Image 1 (cartoon, protein in one colour):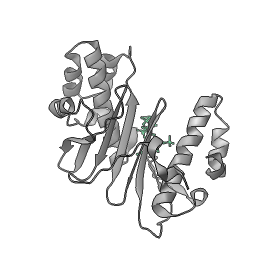
Image 2 (cartoon, rainbow, N blue to C red):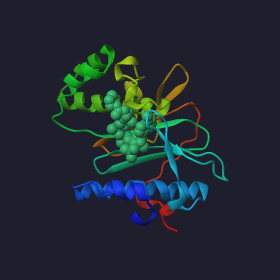
Image 3 (cartoon, protein in one colour):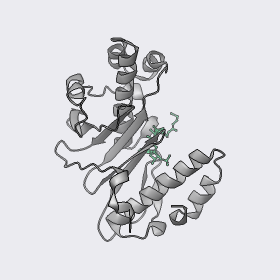
Image 4 (cartoon, rainbow, N blue to C red):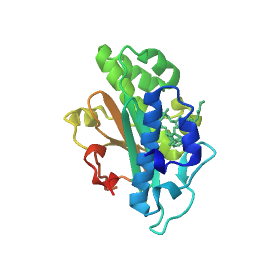
Length: 220
Ligand SMILES: CC(C)(COP(=O)(O)OP(=O)(O)OC[C@H]1O[C@@H](n2cnc3c(N)ncnc32)[C@H](O)[C@@H]1OP(=O)(O)O)[C@@H](O)C(=O)NCCC(=O)NCCS
């Protein structure tokens, strides 16, 4: 993967002291380049990225196969990527850290409705719901492109507890709700230790999920 990174990415990777973090950085950028190559045919090393003023990366050049939008999220040892030809997309994954001060953080960063929802239930339920709400909020800020420049307590996410409960068995991309009929929230089951959410501007997008471990796309 290192061989397909840009000079700037290689220099950045050399700043990591922790070899695990360095490897993860190289892998996620290499995987991103490999997958964009598969969608666009641009050689991975020639792919050029730009960022908006809020930091959202996008492809510098239109490719012969048209526009590809993407978004990336990583947490612990997991990576979640989304690609779309049609929609604006934002994605988020979080490892559900145990013994995390979820009530304090919810009081600071969530709306009062969301923070109050979290206070119901035992410690495990509180942690679980906290991270579920967190990924919805971050995926939304990433879909609209503002990231954390959009204060997390400036909007309520559609936390449909019933839909989440129905998805407990891990069915793929259940629609959780929307904001203003404009942004639609999909639960993306990853594994029980993580929460994942995808936000995009369509209620009827066809979403296909792939596990990188079983993906031929990375092989040439
Ligand atoms: C974007 C942001 C929400 C990411 O949250 P996170 O959970 O820490 O990280 P994730 O793994 O989910 O996502 C990281 C990726 O999001 C993407 N990203 C960065 N800014 C983005 C934005 N404005 N919109 C959408 N995606 C963005 C990048 O691909 C980034 O990967 P990189 O680190 O390789 O550049 C957050 O870091 C952010 O807004 N940062 C910029 C603003 C900031 O730092 N504010 C601090 C003071 S409020």
